Length: 119
Image (tube, rainbow, N blue to C red):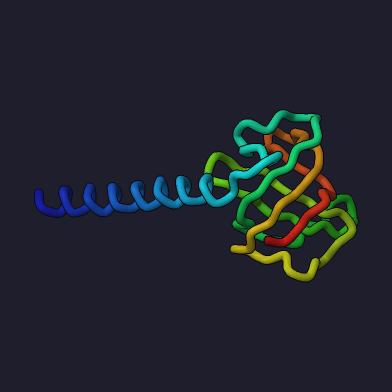
């Protein structure tokens, strides 16, 4: 029985730390003209801020494509730069502001070739 309660405590701590991280990111990346990823409308120009969780090279149709997951504490969007193998400063854990139109591909929200500013 003590094992079960220790497991519950561990899971609870883990969940609470993720909630605290999400709150901190929402506070840190809010600003004028910036939309939360969860509230960002599709097919309209939006300004988003967040942290790049992952950065991978994933070719699409024989063309190199740098793919990243942007997270702001409310949701995620996949950011894709076509024709790029690498971009200086784009790395996991980096804060970034992007501007572009969000679309949907296979049920995943994507933002192709956005303008960006490293934070």
